[in-house]
Amino acid sequence: MKSKRTIRIGILGFGTVGQGVWKHLQADLSALEYRLGAKLELVSASARDITKQRDVQVGPGQLTDDNFSIVNDPQIDIVCELIGGTTLARELTLQAFKNGKTVVTANKALICEHGEELFNAARDCNTHYFFEASVAGGIPIIKTLREGLVANRFSLIYGILNGTTNYMLTRMEREGISYGDVLDQARALGYVEADESLDLDGYDAAHKAVILAYLAHGRWVKLEEMVVEGIRDITTGDIAYAKSLGYKIKLLAVIRRDFDKNAVSVRLHPALIAKNEIIAQVDEVFNGISLTGDVVGETILVGRGAGQDATASAVISDIADAVVALLGAPPPVISEEDEETYKALADEVQLAGPESVSSPYYIRLRVKDQPGVLANIAKVFADHSISVATMIQEEESDSASARLIFTTHSASESNIETALKVISELDISIDTPFRLRVFKPGK
Ligand code: NDP
Ligand code: HSE
Image 1: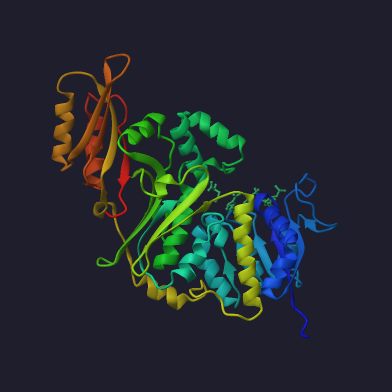
Image 2: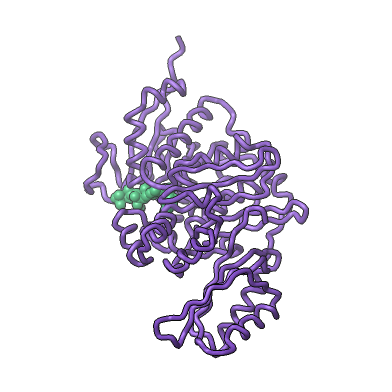
């Protein structure tokens, strides 16, 4: 009988995800070996401070603070980069490729910033780069796009790609907890990234949207080319008004492709979404992604978007693919190494500018409570071709100011921005106008 090949694994970064991968691989090694037809061996892991107390224990000498001892170890076949960041992680990944190793990563920031370079490097070194855990935690969205739905061209991909902010918006909606208090609770639960701006200002989810847009449309979009807005200015009042109008507020990634104009728009912002949409019902730390393909129609995936176990599940799925590739099977149907396929997919796709994007809007104004105010505002809207759908007026306790909530019919993004600027400069305005888009999947 032919003896099974042993595939050796090294882990860079022994934090939340790294320990999860080690723990689950070790717990179920023989089942995975049986399914893959190979022996698997966890060789070593790295951390910055190897004296730190950890939940998961490794054998003597298996934890090192020398990352390069892992990427340069000739015994190791698969390197899992679970350090995070874009500098050291990039350097280690490139070195691992140079040494012929397959790399598995959960690092969305690294792929968003250096994906093109890293995929090219993997191809040039005749190896593979797997990144399932980089988008939506445990949801197999990368595999779904590259393999399961390979027959499709996607007119719309949208959804919730950040668990932390979804948890916060859910608690604000359900319990009326203020933004500041729910942020403290999210911090206490360990949900919020060390760099909080990644979650709160939308960058983490934007990194993930960039990866999905690349997979679906073959074009690397830069963050500077996108609308990226977070949840900092949303109040429990906004959520309550949205609810009374039949909506929920979610932080949405929206990737729309117009095949006639050969344009794609990639954006990340909070939006009102009708509460009967499945994505609107994805709450807590869950993520949800809707994909509309020309062949399959709409497919929706929902699952845990963050956390040790969900992310480890995705990393181990990549390790399994890496093992299969090392045993000689071809890489996935659309592999990141196949530059020609991606070039064909991209087909010189253009980025849609804000002037070509329109949607209904939710607008919150705080104005002086005096005669003529509504007429002034209505004139600004009319001058910018903005048609009002609903309006709520609430007098504030000082009775000198009023809060006005409008929803509009579909309006162009540039008209809304100009109109709100004009309103903010009127002497009736007290606070800077606040607006959210109303997302409609069909539009
Ligand atoms: P952690 O901060 O928990 O872990 C990072 C690990 O890397 C720690 O063990 C740390 O060492 C180690 N490390 C950092 N710098 C160095 C260094 N210079 N040399 C050696 N080791 C170093 O992060 P996570 O596990 O949460 O995240 C890892 C990756 O996974 C990131 O890219 C993240 O974006 C991604 N990800 C995370 C998810 C999550 O839910 N946590 C979900 C999806 C993706 P030490 O422990 O000594 O500080
Ligand atoms: N900060 C991220 C989130 C971690 O909350 O979704 C998972 O990528």
